[in-house]
Image 1: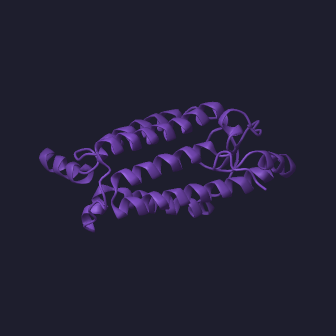
Image 2: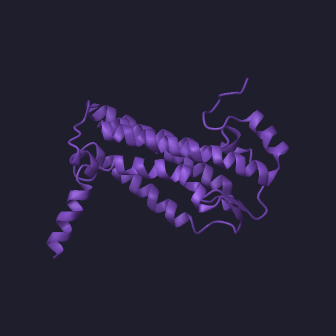
Image 3: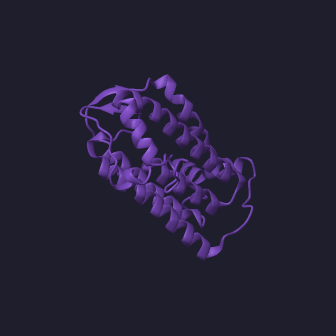
Length: 208
């Protein structure tokens, strides 16, 4: 039975843990996910939140993207790499991935107990416009988009590329929904002023 479970595990993870270049990327993402889940316990009390059924506007594309990114999906549809970036390219894209998720951690730490995995209004919540939040209004999503795109490009299959784009679209949708929610919760005028000063996702992109 244990051998059978081991074979199932190998089938699911093959291409992420066993094969290069995705072995390195898998380790990076595994470390991020574990640390992110553990840090979820460090969060303030929620005052208000977006209803779960409304959150599927962004959760669904992220879920679809995650499925497309799975090596099992690529094998089931016979998706071979469209190109090979080589060892140097893999290391460079892995570095971009690390930089992206490091940016999410900078933002997570800077936000402190106001952070939440869902779209929420924490007790004593206020607009944070310093640190990474002085560069973009949603630095966690910015970091994830950078890291996911680098990962999809490194893997190089059409399924990975489609999956990366779906996840990026989901993060963008989440940012848009969060904009509307926080604007109401924290004050439209205050949030409008913040929006004029700081771009939403892309750093240094100023509104005309």
